[in-house]
Image 1 (cartoon, helix red, strand yellow):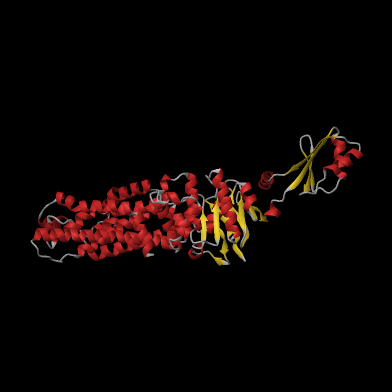
Image 2 (cartoon, one colour):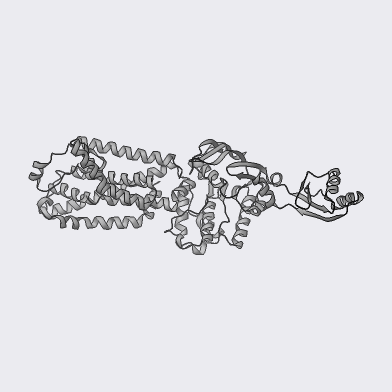
Length: 296
Length: 243
């Protein structure tokens, strides 16, 4: 069953188009990463799902039903920045959220403990550091043990320890069978925790699907020799690679993950009378892949 | 729902404090203005409501603070995200305008009663008590306009500025200009309509000679239409806007 289905969502801010015909589905139990550079429409999309923004056209369903306040009560959401009443304590702020969600207050202490804010629960929100505010927002999401969690840049403003903690928390939540939708521009974050991914660029959905399929890693073999022209003709006779391209002073052969063999390349070149002066296997990083996808 | 209102009370505790503070000052100020027999029954109803009417920008201000406060902390978004519907949110604010107006009205009622008893030597008369109802309408009008302005401008500074300009200068000015050209129409402008329900309470005979008696039914109808319009615009705007 799909938790969330978006159909042709388009959003204009005046004349600026923030989202263009975005459609995808989030399967139940997945950790769904939404990747995109700044200003690509990630937050806008989540805002539309949470009914704080109105889509110009298109629609979406949650658990197959149109969105409603009742459904939102079952979703823990952290959108963009933590929004709390500055002059109230962490505890009071969570009490308001719990009240709106119609959950009991018993969960509050638990949620605060999970994000290590229990000792500071009586402090006013305005006295919190950015990282603590973020933690409180995550605590607010955990109230009432929702089955769907939406995190928009969950590790924003956190220290490395905090980032690792949140990552662990997300993994733990995922292992409990919860569906997590996470927007991020931190690639390693997505790579480490997500099972599915959608990539947005200036409002267009570039690709969506299983993380292994979308962010498939490739082997890059970089080759150079004294006689580049001869090398090129020889390389054309090679097979097994998916594509070849020329950089300033070398050729790059792209192989599917783990299928390249430097020895074979070297042997064939040598047998054809070419002595290589450069032969290197590079693992294409997720970052390069991401830049590639978003630059097309 | 009731509990949420209670938490709203908690949130606005500070603002309520300021409010109760100023309304408790009202009799003192009113007294400073006058200190004449109109404080005896049955005229006291009219007197107190008239002078208290000048302080009605305070409920409006409170509403503006309460609403723009949500905007500046983005808590209106959070409340929606957490599972309030947009309609619920705006209805809570509308109910808040009515609650604040009710509290002001009850306060004014008690103040009037107090003055009446202390000035009139113990006997109580509820003649003219309809002025308390007019006062309530006036209070709701001011707070509804506060709500409307804060939804339109979203920032406290601008909303408060425009609200004061509107209440103190612009509306009176336009109303007076209109009255100059088309006699009487200016009396039915948004705030005029409700505040004209309670005419100047002193020198009754002199007042009669220079101004005409207000047409209460028409003024009531006009006030009612304005109120419905404000609430409708507020509700509509909050339900359809990007937040």
